[in-house]
Length: 108
Image (cartoon, helix red, strand yellow):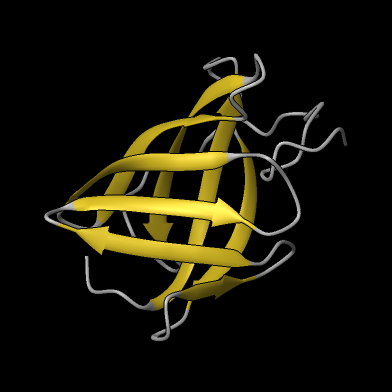
């Protein structure tokens, strides 16, 4: 996965098979933008995302064209996520969910 760029963040609070989606752009300066802004870091194959507007922290691994892992608000809300490059062909479409929380961990 070549960073930075435009991505689709698929997230599921509670790790169900229903993933909500949001578009984010990973910027070269270590920030990201989209419906929520924040900071990102990639070190030794581990990607970390932290939203400015909510308590959620994301951590996971990068493998080829996909990153995936777990996220938490550290206050009882946990979930799973994966990140794909916008326009990625061959990625399985996720079931859309009526999310109770947004990607940043705020109540929707």
